[in-house]
Image (cartoon, rainbow, N blue to C red):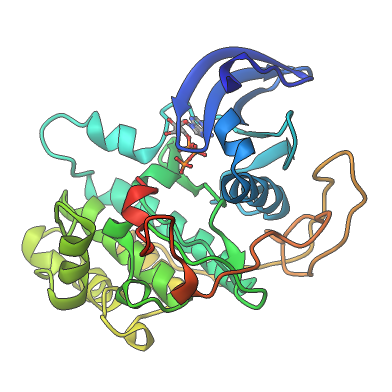
Length: 329
Ligand SMILES: Nc1ncnc2c1ncn2[C@@H]1O[C@H](COP(=O)(O)OP(=O)(O)OP(=O)(O)O)[C@@H](O)[C@H]1O
């Protein structure tokens, strides 16, 4: 059991949560720092696809560096002592925060706008690097003192290298349901769903099955956000609608959303500046510089991110048709 494994250099203090892939503990590192220590389940290590997904998460989390991505401190992508040490967020993920709200799941506008602007900033960075996240949803957003960070790089890949298409059905763009590849625009669609959810208190599309959700995403149009919440800035409301355009080419970029959200907060959006900031990642391996992109630029990595593979139409599971409803929360 992963619960019984120990990771050298860390003292496990208490469990924080359990996901499909791993168990996460609050742990004290030997240097005194508290971390969220992700340890893959035994089952994850035995299953090649799941193990690669975890390895991908470790490598990309350590490679990327941005104030609104969950920071990785150290990790080991594969093997019996695979782990990922992350910045610890005492309030857990955003789903937990929304669930704990009294009454509705609606955040105060300024708080929601700030979280959304931060996630849009993280996506702007990833898209700038040519990567797609593929799993933007509250479960993968962590908030501390009002500022948000996007986590879970397990499904992330560089579009130039190709990768396995996936997503969570409540947040998945129409073209993904059609079996097309993920893109920056499909991340923007997921961000559009998150905008609706945080600013109106409910998701725009609901359903009890994968098929019902697919029909909703492909054929329905939600009410304008400003009708559901009169406090929402009309430009933000219009952009949220555009982010949910059925055709990917009609959606705004993550950066346009970031700018609109910051303007709605009364701030003057600045260009994101990316300069080089390499730092060691996995201690045990030589490093290779991937690119020069930023103050929030990626750290060196040991090898290319996982993620080769399956063309979208080949994404079949054992039972036949690919059905991410089974896998993702
Ligand atoms: N950095 C963190 N700080 C605090 N709590 C965390 C952190 N990372 C994860 N957790 C807690 O652990 C839970 C499980 O984490 P997560 O969902 O990332 O696991 P996973 O198995 O890798 O994911 P998945 O189910 O998508 O495969 C989260 O829901 C959250 O409660």
